[in-house]
Length: 446
Image 1 (cartoon, rainbow, N blue to C red):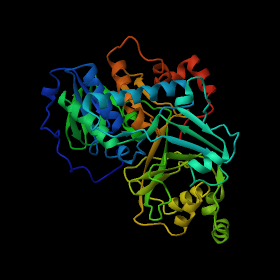
Image 2 (image 1 turned 180 degrees about the horizontal axis):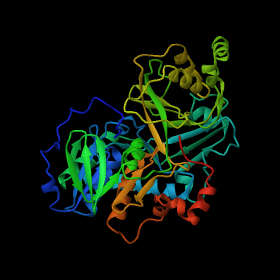
Image 3 (image 1 turned 30 degrees about the horizontal axis):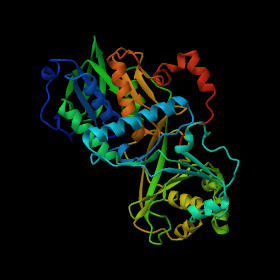
């Protein structure tokens, strides 16, 4: 949605994928514009259609649906989070996805319960806020016996002292899920317009949107689902939300030495570490100030999973707030950092750090988050303007519940879920929520 990206001015014609849309046609009944056609925007369109059949929904995005941040998803899901509100929210979203597979068929999109493993070199480490409670034994398994770890996970470093396995977790085909939601939303009348939003003006009880295609439309309600460009859109309406954007990279490499078992769960190393650089490289980084950051302590959270015949790796160690851009820069050093870090808990991966197998596919996107890493979903201070955003690291797994919650807010469902107040855009004015936020000591981000 960013205005600062140029050279797209004349690229698109103001057409939906099904044909031209006129203001006159759109104004025959209530019209909602969803600004952003990633997985969150598409899910919101779907659940609005389910909640209020007949309403006209228009998805607007500079790019094709599901093609920006969504296409860079880690494609994972897990039903465990440190805070109850997030646990309930993601748990419900998983239920909604499973219901979609029942309704539209299990072949509609893959949802493979392959599990998560959190691992550490310290037996008494408090992993990721995980505390076993009554009833958890079927979903959370903690292994601290050295012989069992060696037998079940022979690829791990011999010094690993604890493995915490989440059973109701795994991987999702986000493109197939998104395509299903978009296809079904279209059947209920949702239209897509490819174009960049330049201005939004409030005109009485409606909103006039001008696109870079020199076309415009008037709608009754707005949903800001613009991912990292949330505040760019919000500024057009005189608003700003407490979010940051951090650039995160991932990459995929082949696994010619078959180091990673194809059935290995999504594996997360929870320990902080100093990357074990060779002495020659360490001396070089020490001598040049711009490389000093490579000698710092890196946080836990380095993660690996099998991907086809290769390996997908990521490490969200970047914390600096960044200005979002449409073109995501690559980092030549990132694969080296991650592979050397990964060799701390899967030693054989150190062989790939010396000579990285090709082809190396690197990609990245922005984590858009609040300080506590809870989403922002619901009505804003402006009447008929809604927000679905700040889904940092959990956009794929949380999109269905986020879209449903926005639709429930929009059409006055009396009994909102318990987590609705925690994610409301006005929560920072709620003393009860503020007290809860002060007690948050683990943000659940990987």
